[in-house]
Image (cartoon, rainbow, N blue to C red; front, side, top):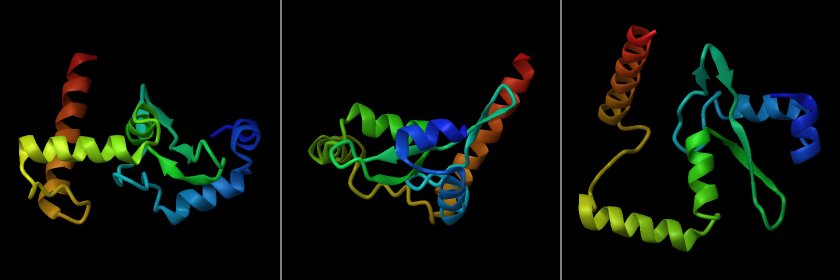
Amino acid sequence: MERSHIWYRYGLSQDDYDARLAEQGGLCTVCRCAPKFINGIERPLSVDHNHRSGENRGLLCDSCNLILGFARDSQEHLRRLIVYLQKHDGINFDVGEDNPTTQAAREAEWNRSLETLSGAI
């Protein structure tokens, strides 16, 4: 991530960003996905921050960062979305990052998407 951007916007030095990234194992702190590559260029994880306090919370992938943004960091909005999903998909739907079945399914889908993408080029 560009030094001046993260310092100006979030008060983080590149060393601070790299340390946070290492603490998270190089993965999004929420969904545990690795940074994506778009056209062969790595898309770094975004610095997530509390919009009220300005405090940096963690590094997120684009998807998780957008979810929070669209929900306006509203816990109530996210809770209502969970209730909605439970109503339509069932309460016992487990997508925990430690679940080997769902992790394997995510990795298989990722590999299929890469094969599809390489076939289209």
